[in-house]
Length: 202
Image (spheres, rainbow, N blue to C red):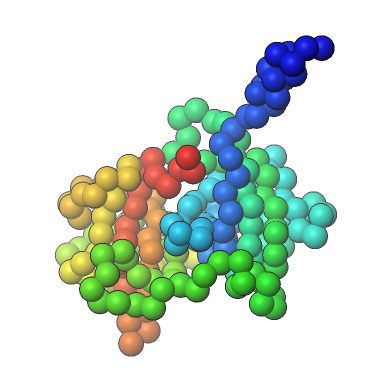
């Protein structure tokens, strides 16, 4: 077999986008399918779906999604799926567990809050359906967690399909992902609300 044929075979074997790496922030699962969000080294949050065909590995063994822990350093390989609103994971591999200092050593720490920075703060990632919207709050229905009230800030950012929009562009009954934090009183407040065809890995 000539060099040209070998190159063609190598190119044909490359299916799907390159894998993404990041620290697991949140896992939303019903046991067989769900979604997970990662914080990459550039602090970008990526959200992936997974289903029963997604292979999940921890310590080189196949495990259920319930074996994943926030803080795990993951590598996610996507499957090609046309028309999907979020990337569908073909494989999820734990590179470094959350326990100990190894996972923290792979990525720089989260930046300290700065009231002057343009990028939204917040360590919480919420995923749910908007059931009510008011000027100062959103009501979300979370999977297997009931209702949740999220306060809105004057500087809350709204992104639809990756583009900055006004709050009025968010329809009710839309599935959203919210980067949030807690107020001194312990209430949840939103720094960023995103929905649509978002956060796809290049």
